[in-house]
Length: 174
Image (cartoon, rainbow, N blue to C red; front, side):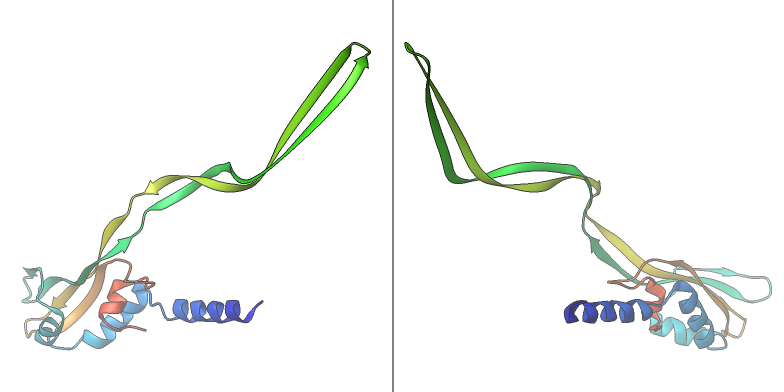
């Protein structure tokens, strides 16, 4: 394997290994925020979208952050190939004259063109280009004293770039 391919393979391996999953983001969120004041969380990451008061004095908040969009190019499927000829301008003409009988002359001319062919795949669009929203959404339970008692990632999209978890990006989980 050439050196460049080895370096690329190693870089891709490190990039994949560095991608955190939603489960890893969930564990990091729990360890960082359970027991912490909800005011500290909301002042750093943004206000909640909604809240629901429980009978025991606790409140469940729905929070959403890290909202942005990523451009996803159109996707295509190859469905065969089409061969096209590109002429080089070289032509060979051969003329053969024969006399099958004393009063008969037959002339046969053959022309052959030399060209290079290129095979171009035919494609059909399976998905148009689009802007895809990415975000992290969490449910945060806070006790009557304003302390986070539970936090759960409830909607985690893919991240920006190669990341597979937007929550992992928002909360800087490696």
